[in-house]
Amino acid sequence: MILPTKHLPLERTLLAAGAQLLGCLDRPLTVSGLWDRVRREVAFPSFDHLVLALDVLFALGMVDLEEGKLKRRRPE
Image 1 (tube, rainbow, N blue to C red):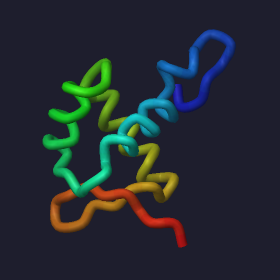
Image 2 (image 1 turned 180 degrees about the vertical axis):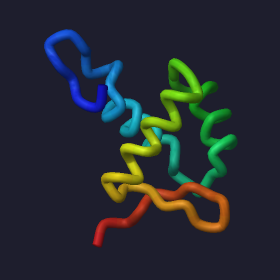
Image 3 (image 1 turned 90 degrees about the vertical axis):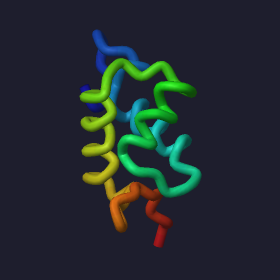
C-alpha cells in the first residue's frame, strides 16, 4: 500500500498520495484545511487515505506539525 506492486498501481499508493499532499502544502495548513484543499484540487479517495499518507510523510521526515499547522520540512 505504501509502494507500488504488480497489483497496485503507483496512483493508488500512499507514496503518490504523499507527493500530492506535499504539492498542496505550499503554506502551513491545518489538517482540516489540507483536507479541504485536497478535495478541491486532487481526487483523493478518503480522509483515512489522507491520514495514512500524512503518517508516511511524518515517518519520512517530510512534514512537521507546529502550532497546530502542517508544514513542509526544509532539507538540512
